[in-house]
Every structure is written in C-alpha cells, then in structure tokens.
Image (cartoon, rainbow, N blue to C red):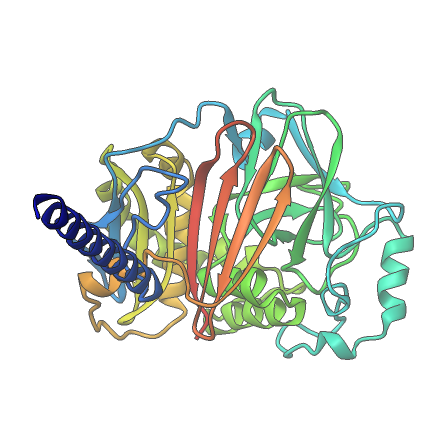
Length: 385
C-alpha cells in the first residue's frame, strides 16, 4: 500500500510540475507576442531596459532609457571618430563592384527639389551612366584602418563625393585596410558631380557636422528601403522648413540659419539632461506620437551618438507641427520591444548580425557584434505611420 501511495504521489507531483512548466511557457510566449518590455534580448544580453521620467520641450518628448547592466565597447569606433582621425575613409564605388540594392533604389532624379519623385519611372540608362562615370547611387566604399571595429548606424550622413548619402542600415566593418562596399541612400538628388570647394571638395566624403537623418527619413531607408521615398521625405524636410537649396540636400536644412536657431533651442533645453551614466538610449515622441527609439550597449556609446541623434529628433519636431499632446510612460516602455511581424536577418559571419522585425505599423532592428561572444550594440525601432 505504501509503495502504491508513493507511486500515486510521484505521478501527482510530476503532473503539477508539467502544468507549471506549461503555464510558464505559455506566459512567456504571450508576453513576447504582446511586445512586452525587455528582457527581450535575454538570450543575447543580460540588460533590462526601463524608461525614466520624460523630458519635454515644445512638441518633443524624450524618455531616457535606463540600464544598470551594460556591455563594454572599447574595441569599437564610430564613423565620426574614424573620419576625423583620417583612419576611416569613404569613397565613391567603381563599376566593378555590383550593388545589392533593389532596382528602384538605384535611380536618381533630375527634377527640382520641390517636386515629388517617382524613382521607379526614371530611365534605367541614367543609372548605367552614373555607374560608368565612377560611382553608384546606392553604394559607397568604406575603408577602416583604425585598428578598431567600425560601427555604422542607419541615417548617418556623409557629405561630399558626387552627392550626399546616408547609411542605409546598421552594420560593422572590421579593421582590414580593405575597401568594403556599404549600402547607402542619396539625400541630395540634384547633384551628381564633385564639389569644387569646401571641406568635401574634389570627391572627398566627410561626416556631416553633428547631425544625422531625421527619424522619418531613417524609416524610409531602413524599413521601406526605397530611394524615391527617401528623396520625398528629404523634400518634405526642405519644404516644411522653408529652405532654399539648388541640389535638394538634406544637409542644407541643418545648415539653414533659421533652422539652426530653432534646433539650438531644443538642444539647449534637452542635451544636458541625458548625461547620467545609466542612460543608454531614448524613446522619442513628437506631438503625442512615438516616432523612434535608439538604445545602445552602454552609456558611452549612447553619448557618442547623442548630440546628432538629438539634432535629428529636433528636426523631426520642428517639421511636424506644434501639438504638445503627451505620451504615457507605459507606451514608451512598450516601444522597447521587437516589432511583431516578419523577421529577416543579414549577417557577415564572424563580424555582425542585423536582425529586422517588421509589422504594418513598426519596424525594429538589432545590430549585434558576433566577433566572439554575441553583443548587442544598437537597438532601433521606428514608427512607419
């Protein structure tokens, strides 16, 4: 009898354990599907992100993203640091390197900047002419001789060459002293020739000074992956801010005196309030609508990008009306999760992995270094609406 009772008790305990395990798995799955706040990277990073109290100026609201568990990034260098040192160079790419961009991403318009652009309808011969003349609209060559691993973030602007470009997506380039082709988008559709004067003269590429593409431009590049949409969004920035530019370059908006004055006001109100050592990123809302989130491996890397990220967020704000509707902390926290939808990944073996998740309303991107142990360097989520 004692043996029988022991057997029954063992079965009962096993059954309860199985039920508990099933419930745990179900709860974990439902939380992930519902876009619960991180730990969504627990298999790759120990960090848990939480949003702090929002900082507001006019129609711009920024929630600091806080983490007390951060990864070292001493082995990495940013594009701005590399270009300033002269140990990273960016050049036009020759016809011998084939582009992987979609056909409608390789076409350039000759229309005035005030016109909206229909890139898929442009003559393909224009593309071939530009390739044969020593360049490709949607590709550049990057050479890293810094001795460190180069990090590129979608939306970073390089000016010069035959036209200004932005990085199409996050990626990593090891220090090999060999030219590596990278995908880019044009943000200056009215030029296809070298400038004759200035710090970017004679085909040289330099970093745009303290700025990068605004969130909606980045979204068109990263999520939509469409050159005509990027041009149209750049044109919106130019038009809404009353900027006059002969070539339609995005950088002209940042260099406009009136725009600079407005951006300076946002910067003075916000920049110094994100210097805490536990702040690793930001969730950004404009006019009561969350537009983007950028989170980095540690505070040091976030601070390296923070000045030009803030400038880009501010440009989005001054280009988007004056509504001061507020966003809840709960909504901001929920935005720190993967978009729930189609998943794709791009990988350079032993260098990096870029994972992408797209839904109808949002897209999220995770850049990981895979040189040794996988390390999450940058998480970005964008609102597609």
